[in-house]
Every structure is written in C-alpha cells, then in structure tokens.
Image 1: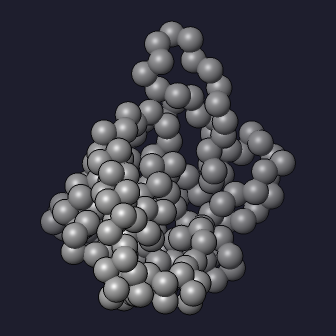
Image 2: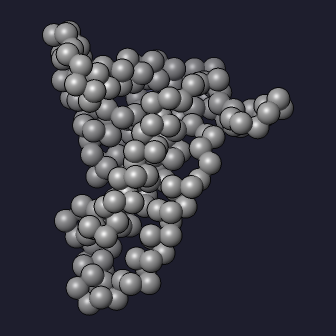
Length: 190
Ligand SMILES: [Zn+2]
C-alpha cells in the first residue's frame, strides 16, 4: 500500500506507475513508483494539456474553461487537506508557496531579512548561485517532479522576506524553471 501524494488515498502499489531511469541503455532497473496514483496522473495530464493550450495562446472550449476553474478549486481543496497536487497547472494555481513541503518559519524569514539587511548573506548567496548552476547542468533522467521539487526547495532558500525570488537570482531561477518545465512537458512515461 502506498499513499498518493495528490489525493491522499491509500492504494495498492499497482495503482502507481513504476518508473525507470532513462538513458541508461538496455538494462532498465526498476527504481520506484510514481508519487501520485494513476487516476490522479491521468487527471493531471488532461488538465495540463488544456493549460498548455492557454499558455500557448490557443483558444479553449467552454468545457475546458470549466475544467480549469473547477480544477483550481479542487487543487486548493487538496492542499487544505494536507495533500500535494503536482504538475504545471497545480503549480500555477497554488504558486510555489503552497506546494512547498516545508514552510518557512517566522524565525527563518526573520533571519533571512537580517542576512539581507546586514549584508551577511554573501556566502550563502554564492552557494545558492552555484546550486542554480548545478540545476542548469544536471542530467534529467528521473520523473519530472523530482526536479521541480529541487527547484522549489532552492527557490525557498533564494527568496526575500516578501517570498519572491531575489532579483540577483531571478534570471537563473527562470532559466532553470524553463528547463524543467520543458522536460516535464516532453516527458514520456515508460
Ligand atoms: Zn491520487
């Protein structure tokens, strides 16, 4: 049994798609199972396909509009219930703030503000920049969510007290986000 990260249901393992590392040649080793169940995965795929049309400036039908607006409510409800909806549209609807696994505490934020105001964060910042570079170069072989989670974690460490990514990192953040989104859009499940 395994709990779906998105709908929170406890389901048998077969309800989760197994995934394999890609680009490793003929010898495919099973490395695990997807974090969301198959029904959630199919649901997200449909919603994300419609959402991609919107992003690409393609007209959508009334039904599709309805799908997006109801899905936004649904994703928010799931978050309220302590679940973590995934995918491009969920991220759009929820923003990085709410999809985070761990929230920044008041103390974290206050320390960050001090770091920034007192100019003490230089060392930390340079480390963050190096991590963005790593994400720009990292080989993408696993399920897309793993990389999105890495980016969210790094975003959390490179945001100012207002929760927005600091200007210094904006360009790199956007480059990584574009890279990971493209990967997710073109990802083929084995
Ligand atoms: Zn599910």
